[in-house]
Image 1 (cartoon, helix red, strand yellow):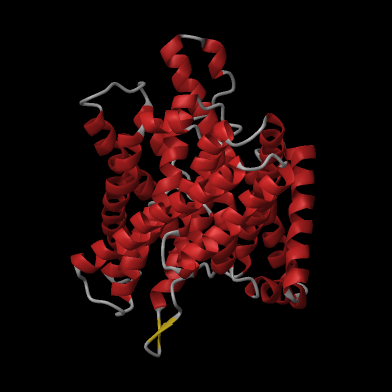
Image 2 (image 1 turned 120 degrees about the horizontal axis):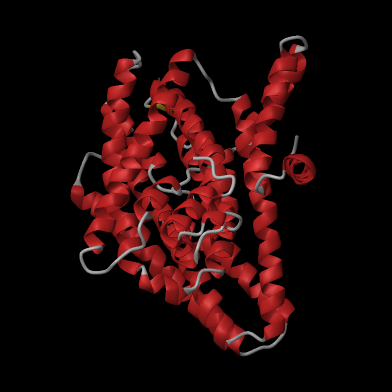
Length: 430
């Protein structure tokens, strides 16, 4: 199948699954589409036991899709830009210290904790994996996925305070997480020895350079928007920022995700207030909401279909299930330290640690990073890749379905505890 045929098939599946979900399941779109895509994949595998050509053909088609490239080199820029457009910069600035610590110290701390727990658990179930690859898994699973978080928060009933904390952290920590992942991957593959100076330089170039680049393209776009009042052209400019800006950042070896977040925040706040008419704002919001919904649906269909090409063994399943509480425990510790540190200087709503822990969803970015690990290094197969892909998939699916379906109820439960309004806890299942 060529690129157009693959794209057409994915969009068609996304539309069909979204239709079935809306009509019958009535789950949040991202979760419903993921569940249906997984069930569809399992059905193909089941049918393949009787008609092998069906499952083998399906696997062949899915193998043609480079999930990592499709997300990291394509969809991610649009999704992050669309998400950042709707984040209030004033609310974000009130949480800047907490978000900054969660996106930096929190990611590094979680990487170390998950890496250590992973090495311990894998040894317990009889899977050998070098410690550096355990840290690599920690790096790719520690950042919360802004795509999953933003999509589910829309329907989770999160207050503005909680929404800003969770969304703000997720928008920034994936960029930091990717830099940490790349640094550890270089060490694991032998491309570079462990060197804090090199890792620090990589962080400055990728993360800080990405932020500066995002500010530059956001500023240029803002000046262009101020000079015209034509919503078609203004939407085209915003599209150029998301597509051209992301491609340019990657070409310059800067953090495209962070660049898109900064540019999106600028156009969604300064640009919206000072450079757009009410008509333009309405059309811009509608356009980017559609882009967001379409790409989200396709992305989560892809996540569901990946089960066709992921290798699962009983040991992998056992390790993945044991790692679910381990990853949550690491998330709890990495959230507690920043919250308690910032809490010395300001007060937080009770329950913030619990909500940030459970609301730290993992999604497509973790799967994409796992699949980006090279299968062969120096002419030798990387046995760890298969293990990492399998356990990543298990943790991600649990996060999306279980945490995604219950985060709204958890938030309402915590709010009810604070307000004493028992009506808010109807149908709560924790």
